[in-house]
Image (cartoon, rainbow, N blue to C red; front, side, top):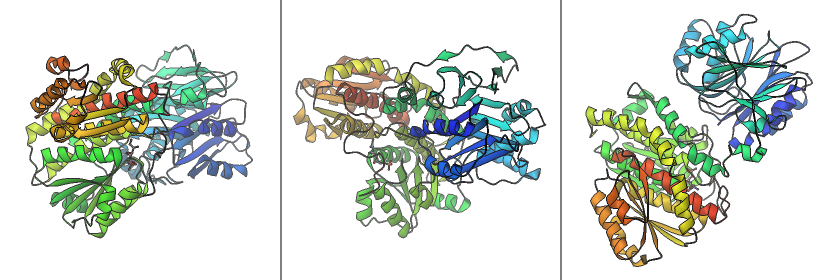
Length: 615
Ligand code: M6R
């Protein structure tokens, strides 16, 4: 996600900020900027630029201003395209304060209207500029802390802030709610950052802020306060013993593992942003598109790789919610297949990067033929996001590991919301209020259930130790978890280089059963809530009868499946529709563990690129 750096001390602030931002580059960003209070004029100077830090550094080359207090930011777009205007820092209209922000302010639209009524104008499309103006509206000389306190009490969402004020050049104020902030303690200088690597070149003594705490940093001092009580919080600094590279991965050995463990937060963020008081919210849905959605006669999912598997899960979800035909096709087949689509068709492109060449070409083909195109994309402002008729962002944050994990779960959560939304607005909606209510209830339990599922790590490690030298794996599932079987096989083959095959379990007798002997591991995805559970159980019996090694993903307490399996990975009981979300976790962890035990380059497997921008 975005990166924050702040500095107050005796050094030149700008080089410290730039160096800090460089250490956050691994997180991915689309624009960057700094703000600092100049010693000569006492004004706040903001320099920001779209693109990489190199461009920002070029702009800074001709700036000969000295400063010892400032804030910096790398932005990963959430509200508004990547552009200079949308880049941080943002100032309030009166030029009193500058702000950098990580996270999302959910009620920014209402606040923006309110501020516009007061006569304020905005230069950007961001929620951050709204927050800057809100703080500015409360600001009185010498009272930055009070202004920030008043403002955050009115904000909803997840955010971390660092603020400076022109009239208070000896102070840097920060606040945290859900998004991380770490304060670096120096001698005669102090630092703040969203992630420790940004401050580790200067100090390894740090204090982590807790939610709803703010801190006042001066050159000599750091004071932390609770927003609720207003009282001072005493917290001893801890010492970081990691290297910068280790710290970038948050202490995890690989980005892939870090991203797997980020999944509860990603899904929580999607639900908090898109689900308000039982209502599903998608931004930028104008009345024309809403009208076309209501008249959709056929839906086509088009995507590649992991995103194709998300599309398959999506086709089951929509199939459960709507009486409208749904197809799923890989982009390369769609683009060259002369697809029969027209103005009553909805073509949904799913893509993490938003730049995949085949998916882009497929989208253009669908548009040419008059279909309505919806892009479900992670990277804001990417080509597919820009060109589609409508875009829904997945809010997974930057995914660094080549093997897609958190982007996949974000796609599934988004597709679940979209399917329920379609059931609500489309005349052929198949499910009523009671079912929708129960789906939304189970959906909101997912973040905690994903956290619970991640506890399987130790058990999966033991299983991987037993099997990591095997060269072939078979994955079986039915219905919603047929795509999980495909995804499990893809994850395993791309990072371990072992052969893995995903199959619909009902097809086992039509071929793959020939593979099964005492050396063959078969991963069976078999949640109890599946309407084909008994069929899956029969498949497992058949594998056992041929002495195959059964690994199962089953619903907690399902001893029938456990008895037939060498290893069982239990997931929590949930609606069948969401079982693919929970079942994805053990198959991701299994692939990861097998790859690590084989000494593979997990984050950058051979021959693969994160974004496939050529055919
Ligand atoms: O950026 P996209 O989602 O369009 O990428 C699609 C595939 O290239 C991608 O999912 C690929 O299969 C991953 N390496 C899977 O882990």
